Structures are given as C-alpha cells and as structure tokens.
Length: 435
Image 1 (cartoon, rainbow, N blue to C red):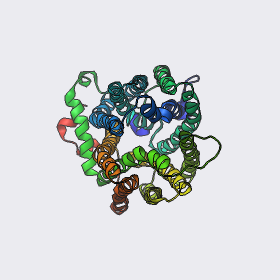
Image 2 (image 1 turned 135 degrees about the vertical axis):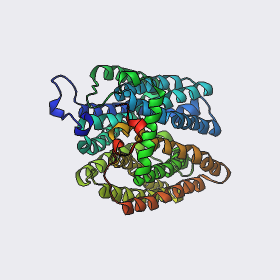
Image 3 (image 1 turned 180 degrees about the vertical axis):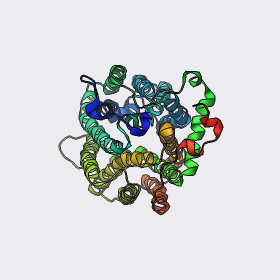
Image 4 (image 1 turned 45 degrees about the vertical axis):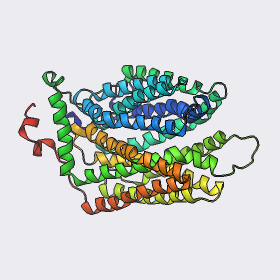
C-alpha cells in the first residue's frame, strides 16, 4: 500500500517539483502570514470602523465556530474519500474569498464572510495533516508538524508589523490584501501540489454518500477501539471551551483592566501587537526545543509532554486572570500564548499514532469538531460572566474549563500504548467489501 510505506522522501521528488515536506512548510508559513495580515487588525476594524457591539462581536465568533462544527466531519470524509489535495486547494481559496467578504463594513456581510471562512477552515483541517502523512510517512510526520508550527510562527512574526502598518493607511487594507494572497496561494497549489500516497476510492464509489457514511463509521469504530482517541476528543472539547473565552476576552483584559506603560506615543493596539509578536518569537524557539528533545513517535513521551504543557498553561492563564499589574499580566499572557501554540503540533502527532491511514483525515476532523463544540458550548457562558461580573471572573472560568484535561492526560498515560487498529481487522464486512 502506498500509505503504509508512507512515502516519498524529500530527495525522491523530481527536479523542479517542491517536495511534499517543503510544500507543507510553505503552506503552513504562507497561510499564517496571509491570515495574520488580516487577523492582526480584524477586531480593531470590526470595533472602530464597523462599530460592532460586544454581543455582535461574540455572534461573529459563534457563527464561525458553528460553521466549523457543522462542516468539519463532512469535509473530513470528503478528504478521505475523494482527494486531500483538492480539499486543501478549495479550502485555501474559500479562506481568501471569506477574507475579502469580511473586509466589508457590514455586520450581516461579516457574518456571511465567516460562514465562508468556516467552511474553508474545515476543508483544510485534517486534510493537510493527513496529506503530508501520506506523502512522507508517519515516522517523519511528527517532525514536520513541529517544523510547520515554526513556519506558522515565522509567518505571524512577519505579518503582525506589516498588518499594523497597512492599517494606518486604511483599516481594512491588510484584510483585503490577505484575502487576495490566499487566493494566489490556492492557484500555486493547483500547480505544485501532488498526491501520490493517497488511495483514491474506485470510480463507481466516488459519488456514493453511502461510502462517505461508511468512512465516517470507520472513524467512529476505530475511536471506540482506541480509548485514547476518546480521551483526545474530550481534551479537545475542554481546550475549545477554555480557548474561546481566553481568545475573545484577553485583548480587552489587557487593554481595559490595566494602565498601559507611558512609553512614547504607543497606542493600545501597538502594545497588543508587541505582546503577540514576542509570543510568536518564543513559540518558534519552544517548538524547536520540542522537535529536538521529544520522540513524537512515542505515545508515552508525547502524552507526558502534553500533560506538562497544559499544567503550565493552567498556571499561566490563572496568573493572567488574577494579575494586579500590566507587567505580570503581560508575562502571563505571553506564556499562555506560547504554551497554547506548542500544544497543537504535539496533539496532531498524538492523534496520528492511533489512526488507520484511510480515515486519518476523518478522525483529525472529529477532534477539530470536539474543539468547536467546546467553543460554541462554553464561549457564550464565559462571555456572559464577563458581562455580568468581570473580565477577571470570566478568564478565571476559562482557566477552570481547562483543568479536566490534566486528569484526562493522566488517564491516557494509564491506558498505555496499543498498536494501530487496521480497519480490515475489525470492520463489518459491508464496509470493507467494496475493495
């Protein structure tokens, strides 16, 4: 099987063609760069130019996550049944189109843009990771995920000051430019992205929704056979619940709860940019340390590191929520942002240790959906606490929402490591008979 050997080494790619490994890094870095051109000023645009109320700001996020929730598993199944390459290309194009739409100063249009972007996210989520595992093999994929995380941080580092600079000329200009560049990236992928490791479904089954349903059931069946996957999904739920409150409320807490240092004529948005820039720089170094020291093919090693990372994350988030000064809050904010950034690639490697290649994108998507459910379920409640009580109380609630994940990591360590369950070993005959 093409997927069992995993593939092409970088050196085996024909001359003039970008290797899958390097293309994965390019896509990771470029996507981060282009999106962060927009994200570095997106909330400022929505508040100052569009004049959205706090409730409207929350609804924008809820629409995005709700779209992600509804489309995550269908798009993951499409990537497994049809083509991971196609899924990534279409998703990249939709992200670009969505950015162009949200640059319009209208609440209703911004909601529509977030629906488009949400679908784009789901098409890429899982499919890109599954594609690179198919093309370079599971042994090298863990390092690729960590390198990809570094590329994302480099993109963010470059984009943040550029986005702020462009916004001084016109507030939505970096959003428009970011959308155009994402469309250009989709065009580049049409030309450069190959797909050798993926086993396409036979033609007679390609338009069969029954086969899509069967692929999803394969993923669900594998999840039942691997208790660690249920643990991963539960952790994703609590991480989503916690991150929604932290992401939406931390900028307001930094800029409204503290007296900012009087250094020159720096505006609040510049201070926020300085902190996010610093966090991105530190995340690159942290990801490199993990790449060198952590055996990403070891279930126990990755689980222990994730337990340690999330324990420190709980401490940092609590420190941020309860900080009495801007300097303490800034340090805690940077620490929490760094720790959250290095959690993601390790979790990707962790999931791939337990997944049959044919349903890899589906299972990764199921994890993403668990995260989205957590965000939709927990975000409004935490936001309500912020409105009725205080930002400190809301951020404390977001911190508490993450605590159960520490118990779940401990459970995963106790479950131990088991071999990957192959579908043909345990799937019902009607699911596998099509081969």
